[in-house]
Length: 140
Image (cartoon, rainbow, N blue to C red; front, side, top):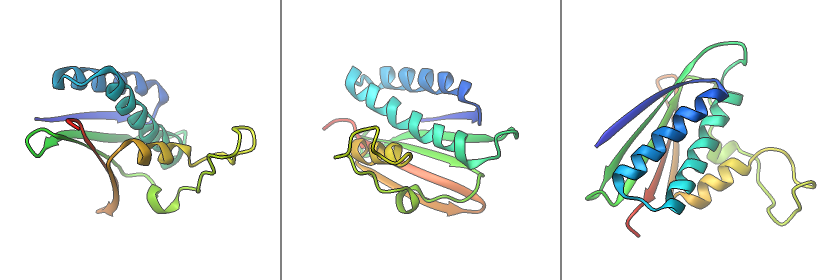
């Protein structure tokens, strides 16, 4: 099973992403909590691309591919964009979750959530593209 969604760098596209994830999770028979968590992770990742990868006044696209591995126990999401190179694993600011929300620095919480929810997160820059790969065991 391979699914693909192309989105423009516009926050209005989040609605299409949500619908894509909900249909996918329903087809896979995933429960509501896992569906919510996957939606949260992907919304964070896509929003970061929308907000930071490209100049705000230019129209660009990103591609989200998803498939399952290892007898359908693992779901993989690959988010690819041609924005400015940014390795969220190494370059995102460290988040101090012990501080109250009003005392925390802005930024970094999205990648923190992605790393907390997903089982494996990798990044590579290849042929002019940022490629963020996120895996989740859906049968655990």
